Amino acid sequence: MGKYNKMLQQERQEIFNSLYEGKVPKRIPIAACVTVEFAIKYYGIDILKAQWNPELLEGAFRKVADDFYSDVFPIRDLIRFPVFYRLLGAKNFVMGSNGFLQHPEISAMHSDEYGAFIKSPMDFILETILPRIYSALDTDPVNRSLILAKAYKAYCDTVGFLNGVVIPNLEKEYGKYQAPPQSSAMTAAPMDFIADQLRGFKEISLDIRRKPKELIEACEAVYDTMLERGIPAQPSIYNYTFIPLHMPPYMRNRDYEKIYYPTFKRMVDGIAAAGGKSYLFLEQDWSRFLDSLYDLPENTILRFEYGDPKEIKGKLGKQHIITGLYPLGLLKTGTKQQCIDKAKELIDILAPGGKYFFDLDKNIITVDSVNVDNLLAVLETYRTYGIY
Image 1 (cartoon, rainbow, N blue to C red):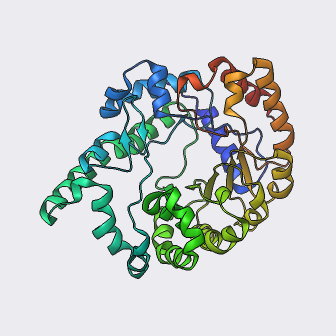
Image 2: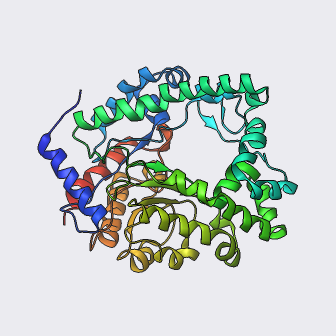
């Protein structure tokens, strides 16, 4: 049952508003979130059944909210459910026997098709890529329209229902931070979109060396679409556009500078110019690229998986909002005191001057990936030690 506390919710609104404005809040905001799969397993219901029946999920969400302290509602990644992928005959997201959606390596665009993509990206995606990725769409126009309509209805009944109804109601009931309505979005850096959805990791790695000119032109061609996806209906600095960043750690510096960075930076600048804010999930190790991140719009949110907290704070802490870096693995393998000590170490390094909130370096996906007692101890440490 929810524990609504009006004063606590007001405090949470104030500390996140201060954070997003680049001011020092009264305490470190805590964004401790788990995935839907973790919540289902933690609650003890069948993971396959629950993902096909979203009405079963509210109990799992309540259990997580009751047990884990967080200033935001502690569920994330409410974007992928098997029902609409099954209707589409998806090859890029496939439900495994363990109840987890898998993202197989696929290459839907051939190496000799860059010219067609650059000429008209959206036409190429609609006419060529979608039927290759979604086998159910490889049919006549009438049936394709019916299948798309069914899949969109299923999407609205799952993702739309949970994000538009269930989560906002629970945020209010539990007194969590609530961002302005319609102020969130999700997009991809142009090169990441090409790598993830069109070429695949293996092929894009070859393209970087063999077709750099075509790859740059393709990033420019799809830029407008990625920017449009990244601007919320009601942009606000008190929420964000989530952008997971994939390819740079696997690129040479000069390739990053010539191919990846120009359209990526322009997109983040465009979101800021529209009145929004970007939340960048910097996957793997971005230590080589810290200087380039400094030049992004002020108060961009940077969630790091790896890196030296002191170096990151020193180079970026006055310009941007830092999060992540707390090692998920330590919650599994460390003692309770080791976990508490790590929390205090990161607070002492990252908290001075503000522009920091708590999150882990990786998402908690499975129940056996953490020692729950250690996680609870870390959350309590941030709540009591993280006072300015």
